[in-house]
Image (tube, rainbow, N blue to C red; front, side, top):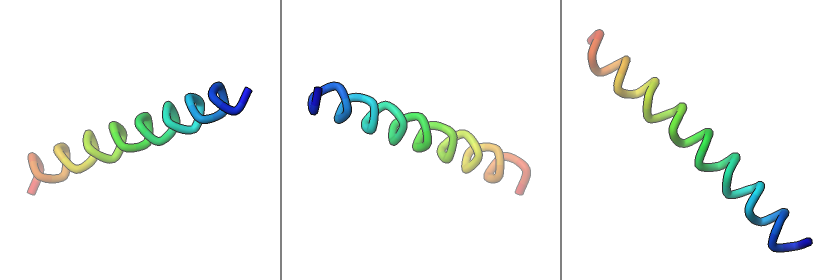
Length: 31
């Protein structure tokens, strides 16, 4: 159960990081 929760947290962190990276690339592209 704890491992599953850890996986879910890691998934959301990675998802948020990917979104942040995409936004960063878009900002760099438009600047």
